[in-house]
Image (cartoon, rainbow, N blue to C red; front, side, top):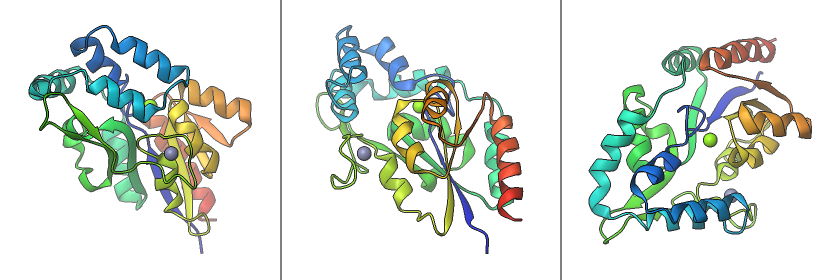
Length: 223
Ligand code: MG
Ligand code: ZN
């Protein structure tokens, strides 16, 4: 019996052309956000700490302005709607695994009806400034990275003896998951890392490329 295909698809820089947290900070945060971002990139603080600190600089009253801005600003990578439809028709399980925040990931993805298949961080606007919540934080026995939204933890819920697990992503935050997946579809920095580490992967630029890879994978698995 063949394994079932399950996809773990990143959001920022993968489904959207650019990183939405960076776009939000550029538009709404005081310039100090850049120093926090640098600390995250330099691995001085964790992604969870950095994202929490950056959003804590933004007043909760900005919520609707931020959503309106980012929904208008975010460009969806070509082919995404066809990719969602292809997965549905082919019976491929598609999960969105995002380090983004629910209050903007949800509205950007609303046209694609993926609601209960989105894993991301949460938010609380009851205080003076925005508090990020972490419903999918690392379980510390298996991940020491303090990811915020732990992609590895989600992937582990799909055992390799039943599922053929494919990670789709663009960046360093996809790498831990890519290492434990069966196959990777990668662009940008993740593509470079997959090549360096000799992980099984195919590159992509649009979701039409992703569909092509999936069609040949599905044929392979059904042989
Ligand atoms: Mg990304
Ligand atoms: Zn983790």
